Length: 248
Image (cartoon, rainbow, N blue to C red; front, top):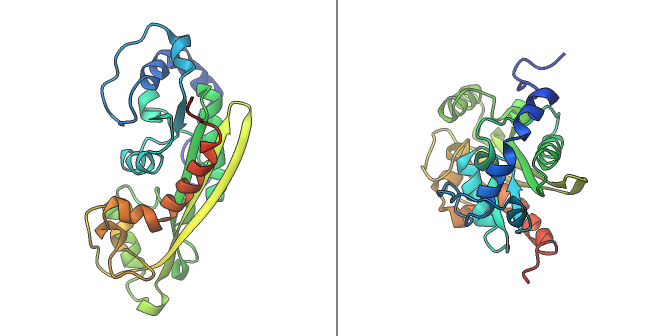
């Protein structure tokens, strides 16, 4: 039986009904610069656009997209996201692990769009909560503020020494032909008692990485990307992708 908080599956019929309109959307996205959210000029020659070097990042989360775009900035490719193609497309995330969810999303998006696709699944695992919220990090509560409040309430009586936690990030790269590579990284830290900082998103304001006296939300993006789970995973992904996309 599916978990009550699991997202609805996207049926094959529902996906197929969307595909016809994707070519034009992909075309417009592919000719943009790597600035997420900028206006797209119209395009009439779809075949010309599709030979351009383009990487799809399978996310609708703008904050995550901005972090990933910064991490992939050195790649000689145009980076687009699901929001550029279909803001309503919700890819399946029904796996029991971060790696399974990343794999699902990368394969589904690559086969749907025909583009090489990078997908990630990430979340927070708290030792005192037996690894929760884990793969349910995004669905632990409706909003970031509510998710943070729920975690702090659950840990209210947990002493500082037992508030250890880690962020996980699993990344998968796929093409329409199948899975290409997978990467996993973590960052260790602890959950503080009061949120601090405005720079990050998700659980960043209550996560203090080991060796630092600030939370991830108190770090500037460049500094955060040096140590974060997502930063480490996508740097490794970028190194791999450099072998794919070689500037002429």
